[in-house]
Image (tube, rainbow, N blue to C red; front, side, top):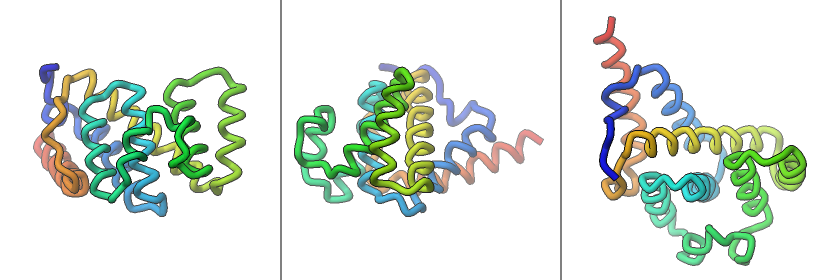
Length: 172
């Protein structure tokens, strides 16, 4: 895949600031970092976003995630390396990424509610929405995998907010 467009350079700052702010908020929230990265990786796998698969795989490795948890994620239903809460979150991730009929969403939500508070469910849902947005941006514009190093995300989020603020000031 070739880079079609550097959307970070050409986009209006406000939408990217909003996505970046939500991503940063979720990283600072009480969501368990490994669970957040698992959700991000699973949605990225479903969407076929190579850039995000690369990123979140590296993040999980940096969080000392055992390799079976990383390698078995596409077959999480058959693997016994995920907790019941993680399984519920992964099912919710798949349901919101694929958007099936209401019955599936109801079942997935019921399982999720057994393990997470309403506030945590809301945060998990925003995490799924945001990663799906990032996936679509990276796929649409051909962002290439391989450049990301674990730990870059926190610095990138801070840098992106500064960059967007500068761009916004220059547009005035």
